Length: 106
Image 1 (tube, one colour):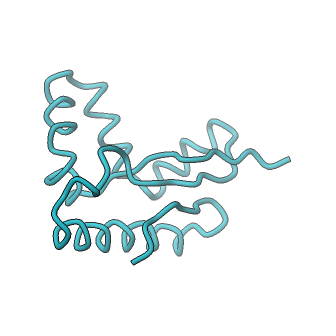
Image 2: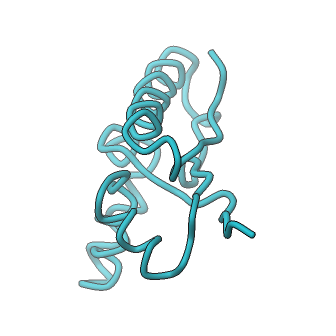
Image 3: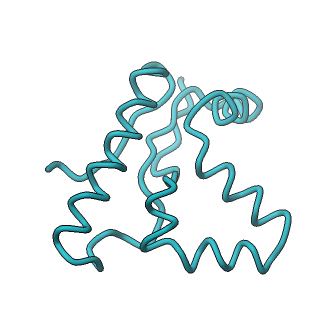
């Protein structure tokens, strides 16, 4: 049986500058562990794969972390969804056997 984790989260710089800005500020206030978690959210590459290997996880199905994009005005939400989907698609292309994703279809 292949261990697959469902709904693991990621973030993009654009997300943390927009709807995730409170999350970014909270991490700054909490300190080093929260800042490491923020770095982990950005990592859709080798660092994430190494953590998956260490935990015995074969595949992750990743999605954008909270809060969602639905709180934004339409133009900003669509632009950020495109950016987010592109980042996720790029990661899946680089690691097709290890990553899959939940994303908004535009």
